[in-house]
Length: 296
Image (tube, rainbow, N blue to C red; front, side):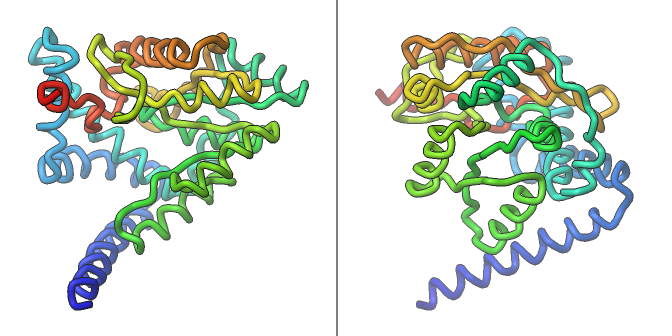
């Protein structure tokens, strides 16, 4: 019991510190808070959390020939985007007002509208890049209800207000536990639109590649799409040079076939997008785990 109490106290202290910082930043005007959070993530959080080291390690693994000047640029830009994304999510209604009216572009826009007019489900596959919630908020504003998944935080107190922030942008959202995923899939099967981030390491996933390196990836999104006849559209909310606005890109749908082949295509398309916007993908993720391959 004492151990549990100490854990609860640590969670409470951590949550209080985070809420205090977020509260102070959220008191600033919208554009100022987004810029400040990007600066804090770049200059304070990144070195303390080991993000710079992780970014360099991932780049060395995936893009070993990058010149040092390019690596240094990416090491600066990635935390800036991560920080901006976090405070944008917490800005809720202000964030939605800021992105309201941003045009959707790409052949996936008409594919989405055609699917909806025919009552067919849609799976929007995306990644930790730019800020997908800019696309989510815009689609919801256009009248497209969009279901999403979220990974619960270890700190239950922090998780409560994080989920509240995500919900302020749009609902429904489902946790990645067994019951939540079941409800998420049912939402798709019933003809809904789902958004799912596919760029995470999955130890039981398909043996596919990303940047030419082994990157086991779940085939669930593509398998669900094939099973329920959903249109699969890769899409991205890419941050513009001003750091505050976005290009919302919806690509040509992925043709239905073997889910592993579809998943590889999703990875290949994402790789092309990342190569064109290297500072916007979350290189802080452990997308590859070469140490596991060596042990195997």
